[in-house]
Amino acid sequence: GSRRLAQGRPRSTQRSPKRRSRLRPLCETTMAPRGLKAFAFAACALSAAEAGQVNKVQLRHSAHKAAPTGFVTSLEFKHQLRVCNAYPNTVPMDIYRGASERLTGESPLPYKDCRDFEAPLVAGDKLEFKMGGADAGTFSISDLPNNDAVLLLVIHRHDALSTAVAFESHVFAGLATAQVAVIDTYKGKEHSVAKIMDLSLKKEGDKAEPVRSEELRYSSVVAVNPGEYEVVLDSDSGEERARTTLVALKRQSYVVMRTGVESMSGSSFPQELVVYPNFDPASLHSAAARPLASLAAVVLAAFGAVLAC
Image 1 (tube, rainbow, N blue to C red):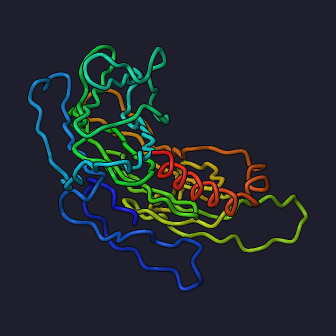
Image 2: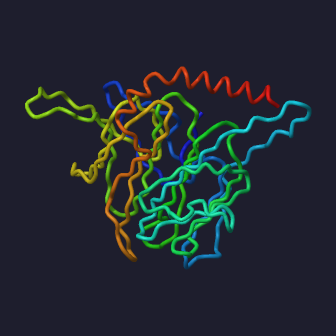
Image 3: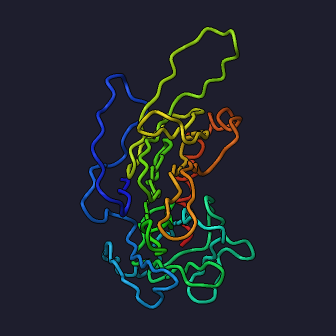
């Protein structure tokens, strides 16, 4: 099943809407006072001024099965690493595996951007994050799930006072529905609520219909029915802070982030919404007939892997 997001302070529990919800929780969303479960990662966060003082946090261990013998070998699982840069800075982020393998190549990851990496990960890998050549933080992988999965990793600012970084991580389960991880990386005094609502395509003069709207709780993962939606960020007073679109497709994994910082030292960045990945609405129609074929392909691939060993 899906696992909860890692890190973040406790949030107040929101009242569920009385009408039928389009959002279905994929996991328990009650937050612990300290870190939450992640995909067996150990995170180290530090600022440039604090380089060398790395505090490692072991999140989870799981035992590996003994190496098989004979003509049957273990299946190889596909782990897609998805990294989002929510650290407010004009300098983009470089990502290294180890000391020399530059995953971002010649294109560092800008603020408010995400990227998928196909580089195979193994337990023990260390992801080094750098800005302008200066060390920002280190993320160590202690274990990986025994199934195909999208591994989400978000780097963001630890607080409004220091420049230290923090990490959030999550493993998306292999489900047929669209999954959305909702993460609040904003640091500051302002409070805002993220909401998802139907995308209104009505022209002027058309008969108005009520637009369904539901809150997206931070530090939660929900299932969303396929469709085209708007995600809105509203302040406590009801003032709209940001708005973007979300095209939800079956079997896809998404992240919705509130970004920005009200910095007590250095530059401040306003509250904004980031949704990733972004799909063309036309994909909703082309993907409608895929689920059965995709499932058959997965089953055949699994049997092929066993028989070919």
